[in-house]
Amino acid sequence: MATSPRRRFKAHNYPNASLVKRLMAMMYDSLLVLSLWMLLLGTASYIHGEAVQGPWVSSLLFVAAYSFFAFFWCRSGQTLGMLAWCLRVEDNDGYVVNLKQALVRYLGAIISAGCVGLGYIWILFGKQRLSWHDHWSNTRVVQLPKREKKK
Image (tube, rainbow, N blue to C red; front, side, top):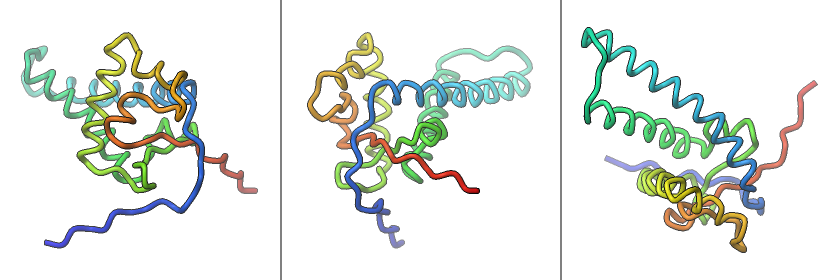
């Protein structure tokens, strides 16, 4: 079985994204993930006949959120929130991230937020404006130029 070649983005020199824009994109994406969770929990409750709970439910929600982010990051480098704010995640060589990088990035983002947001605040003090999970996954979030409106 042949593997597909990694897709490289067009050569560029885009700056790393600011913390504010990243947080705004995260707010958009959190609404989408919350909607996905509601759909899954509603379906599970309907099938089960009552409210669902337990470790399998937490695991389902965890995997669903990871699948959401991994799908978009590995496909185009942009979630819907990132698309709205003209952001894109890519590896340090300008390629689309792979599933391993997406997993490290996802788990690292949870750790970054769980440490009272210190992993994100790191963006303000680092020379390269990278979060902890950017460093750990060898990725970066870049600010794309604004798209021109079609007439």
